[in-house]
Amino acid sequence: MSTIGHIVLAGLPGSGKSTVAPLLAERLGRRWVDTDAQVEAGLEMSVSRAFEEMGEARFRAEERHAAEVALASAEPLVIAAGGGLITERGALDIIERHATVVLLEAPDGELAARLGSRAIDRPLLAGNPAGALHHLRAVRTAAHGQAQLRVATSSRTPAEVAEAIAAALSTSVRVGTAHPYLVGVRAGLRQSLADHIPTSAHRVAVITDEAVSDTAETMAALLRGRDLTATVIAIPGGEQSKQWG
Image (cartoon, rainbow, N blue to C red; front, side, top):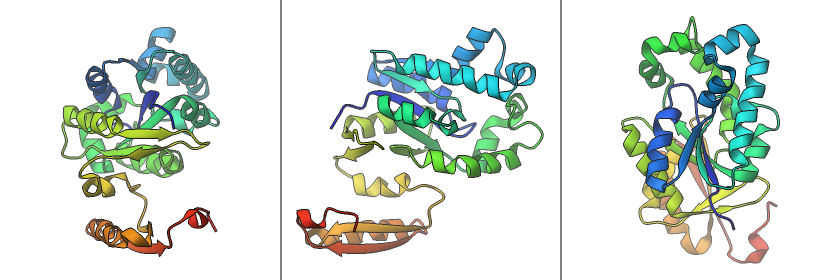
């Protein structure tokens, strides 16, 4: 078991990383860092200009460097990561060693509406924001699936999103395996279960000890209420059941 460590906010453009980060940092009594802002300060140019003049590869290298500097801090930080950072080869491995990844989620249409006319300032969205968001979601799904916490931002203000993250992390323990995960212990957790299911998922298996299969059935019913196919798999209790086979 280990502490939460740094908190890295990830998500598609418009998900609210840079807006939520300072609010979350204030609630947790931490400093916060925005990797895009760090890159802009270091290069003395905007992200869009850096893409145009230096190319995406150079920008990603600068972005990764900014993230590595933040992750090396002995002081736990809240880090608003550039949208493509965790998809870079090897970047997620580095992040997972030092931080808990929180994915901010919202449907493409809502993301596009939030960005509005500012979408033209995003190099990867210029020309067709809606289509570009759909494409980015597809190519980043695998990386986003590695997040230890998923938080739905639809119908929530940035302050409410920050509060939801703070509440979840303050009642969770991080298990530092090769691919870290969180164990949450708090009242009402079952009611928010569906919020932690990847948006790309359609089928869910609820694996349970036979002794608490009734609780598992309740959880499955909540998932079905979100248009997910949920199957309960009850197994005998005991150490002999704690294996993939």
